[in-house]
Amino acid sequence: MNIFQAKSIDELVWACREEKDMDRKVALYHQIREALSFPPELAAPSMMTDDFIDSALDNV
Image (tube, rainbow, N blue to C red; front, side):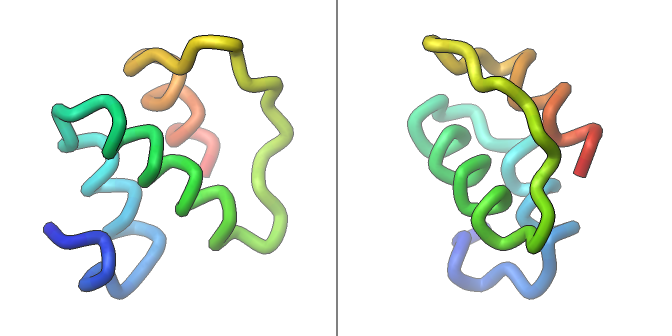
């Protein structure tokens, strides 16, 4: 799914969870956080991991 074609936060979260390329996954994660009016307060680690992003998406 092209991130510009996503119609909702749910679709962005799904696309982020399914993304295998870590750079694109991080970019999607940041796009999701920017789209939320009240993003969950999580301290981001110095190195983003697949597990961190998936856990953070559980809070969305």
